[in-house]
Length: 152
Image (cartoon, rainbow, N blue to C red; front, side, top):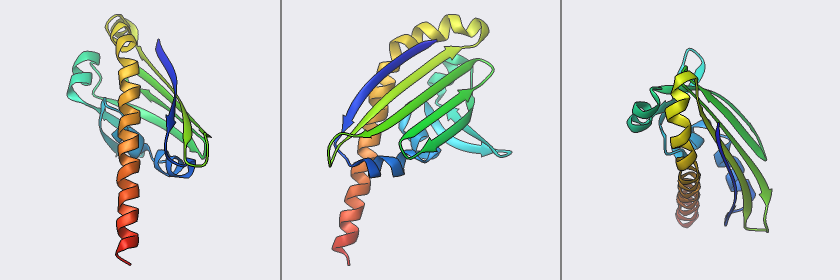
């Protein structure tokens, strides 16, 4: 299994990250390999982007998603791919949050021969992209809040 872990400091209060990361849709939007979050027969799925689907042979991942205020964990499974993510939030000052992010990907069966070497190279870029998307979403939310206050 390919695995990466990194701690990011995000210049936003922990409450803002808690609100955003509680949603599997928001987490899916921030993951570069996820095209859409869907629900089928009560089961959460992340549909994979075409490039990821072509490489892995997996069209989507069935997702188990658990969120508490300071910890988000997910497991995504398909017959050819297993992905796990773990996010832990801690205050890093009054206007900053430390985000400890662990991301793992593994191929299942023969797919592991292709998936794991590629995942080992790509995981850090995937994590950096996730944080970039997260920071952009937080900035958009803050701008909307400022505009909302200005219109009162």
